[in-house]
Image 1 (cartoon, rainbow, N blue to C red):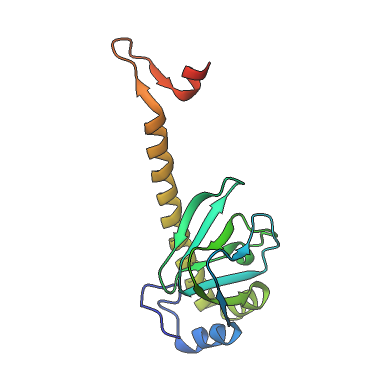
Image 2: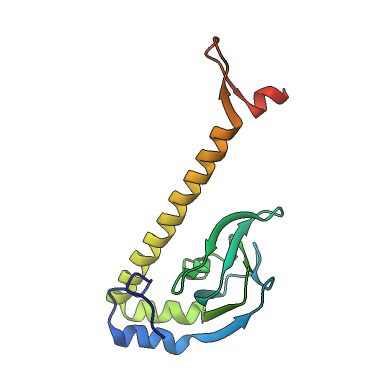
Length: 163
């Protein structure tokens, strides 16, 4: 399996990546299939090879992130000691994934600490970008719900208006 240089495996040696890929199981899903829900046991780490995945939170399905590029990874809860997933993953189209057992992947990462460190740095960069994207979404929503009243200098929010 080949991914572009900017994926999660960038900077790691080929033998190490090969060892990880030997753990991977290729799976195919249809539009509307659920991979996991918030609170499900976090047992697997995923790498998308084709398709689109919506990551959402809460019962209303508020979108947190759309996975839509080959090589994008998700399901990180399985690698950091979380017992449950923090989001729900739903296929928005026909999707192909590489599914890795979290415990087995963790063992490979620990066995080869140099490449494992690179892997976690790359994962941190990915999550950092997603966090910044979430900040922008929250900031945009907050600005849309807040308006300055003219002449008084007071800020009116939807909370103030409802009260």
